[in-house]
Image (cartoon, rainbow, N blue to C red; front, side):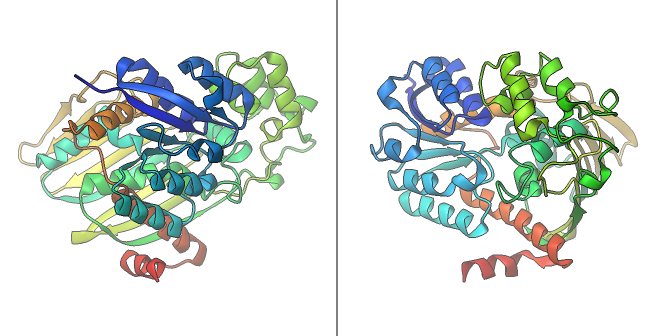
Length: 425
């Protein structure tokens, strides 16, 4: 008979509510029993959704964790810079943890969390949800089956999307590195993790270039006001017009809930948000400082070369080109593009079906659902998949990102082994 795993939620924003909503959909597998969230509307949404008693709802994580271990799992989805303290406290109570990525914006803190978890015998699953998508599971199995021979090179693109960039990484919570972290860490530690997982070897050296080139005040249209709703001479044609994106588009629940910080926003709430918060500011006049385009060159063991590009100036999506001694593979993270393999021996191109089609339309291409289902099996000791990784591997792959940022800032090539040793001193 399967056991119901109990969970507490620390941080009830978009990611926290997404994961716990999936837990609720899985019936008797999970039960959310407590929540800590400072914003009333978000906390109350979780309370009502999961039938949590009022006395188990907190505005801060500290009194919740002061109760000791009251559940099996701590789901930690606070902002990036607020992961370390609750994670360390939860580990001290021997909670198993589902930890939103990135582990921390500080590489030393990442290493400290991983070491403490190992000492306490605690399992921490970092939310690298791409590992759990049908697409990338299929790619991993094709590589491990030897369909491409020995991997020689990978070109991988994360096309952020111009409007997504404006929402999350210019106007939103992750636009300023002082409030959150570098964009490569926020958005693409997913991708560094997936690349290392697919290759199955360690990264040795990293080089990176990138900058904030476009979303800057000097590129604002002449006569543009501080807030779009005040009337802009380019408002009709601007793709970043906040009135159109947040107020006029009634179907974009993600944008509307983000700007109001309310799970059920009214038009009045949205209008107030775009008049008074950065979500309504001219996209060229915000306090953003993270890059809008970046390239990372990586050298893995056995001279496997990888190029990764993260860029705002596109429609959006992820695209990968894997080149091996036996063939090449092309794939895209969407619902229409098939995986194709060109086989050197036959000279033919074959379309490959994506495994486990169920859930492909879920969050992050099915990865959100996949990680919650895998977490249950992992903690029950019944997991038989290939996606789950120990937090130590997640942190190793985070270090690729930190090293890339050091390279970008200092115009150097960073040796990962030396970089890791320096952190441990």
